[in-house]
Each structure stands twice: as C-alpha cells, then as structure tokens.
Length: 200
Image (tube, rainbow, N blue to C red; front, side, top):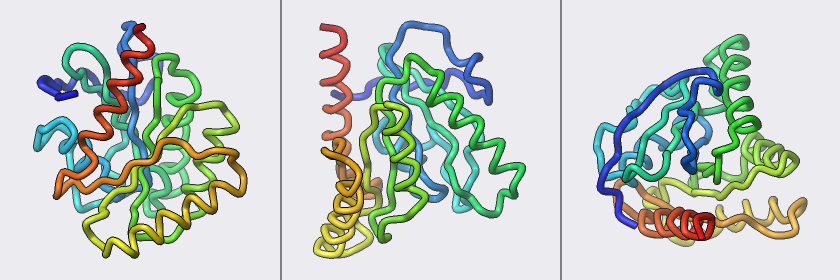
C-alpha cells in the first residue's frame, strides 16, 4: 500500500467525539519519546503531519488522520511520562483507556517500543492489559538504526521471551527506523491485508 493522501480530521479528548463513520481505525501508542510522531510522519510521507518534539509527552489528544479517504490513522497520547504529575497522568490514562476499550472502529493498536532498551515493566504491563481486554495489537520496535544489529536482535528477543512467559503466541512484530525509512512497507502491507480481509 502507498499512502497518497493523509489529512488531519479532528483532535479531542472524548472518545464520543471521534468521527462517526464506518471506517477502520489503526491507532499508534507508546511511552513518551518512543518516536511515535516521527514514525507516523514516515509512514504517511508527510513531514509535519504529526507534531514531533524533543520534549516528551506533547501528544495529549486523540488525533484522527484520514488516509487515502479509506481508513483512519489515530495518534494516541503517550503513556508513562513521569513529569506530567499525578493528575495529568490520570487524565491521559482515562483518555487512552476510554478510546481503547470503547472505540468499536479500532481495528489494530500498534504498540511502539524503543528497541534500545531492555524490556520495560510499563510496556509489558500495558500489553498484558490489552490481552486481558481482548484488544488486537501489534508491536513496533522503533529506532533500530541507533544500535548494532546484534544488540537490536538481543533486545527484541528479550521482549519476546518476557511476553512468552504469559502469552501462548506473539502478536505481529515490526522493526522500524524513521530516519532510514525501515519497516514502512511491512507495516502498510499489514494494514492493507487486514483491510482486505475485513472488506472481503
């Protein structure tokens, strides 16, 4: 699949105000500073579609982008940003949970993980929660260009080992670099295959 059109539609904090259309939605989420905005811009080939910032925790809204006039790409707030304060974190958690649990159009949630780090408790717990609630998701490891290939494989294998302690099988896993445009084709083909299977 090639993204030819990507247009911003709406931002809000209330799942009930999301677009009321019968279109499939693919949402992207991850810890603050995981490279989510850069990945979305890389996938859509639009440099400023999602706002990137060196300051973590900038996305605090549910952002809908209409792709090729067919499906929605949804940019969700990042979780676990400690400096936001307890009230702020609670507010973000409410926005995230209400969207994930209540949004019937959500087709697949892409969970972004920084490939440079060992398995993080917050990520593992979040994916566990998704499993408990029956939410279909896939994993995207970001920034694979920032470390050696052997270290990248080692870190990803650690995550797989941790997940397999509680999961019978792993979700789809993608490796990406926004700078090198790695993983773009694989992710878009995955979305296209789901679109085709659900339309068929």
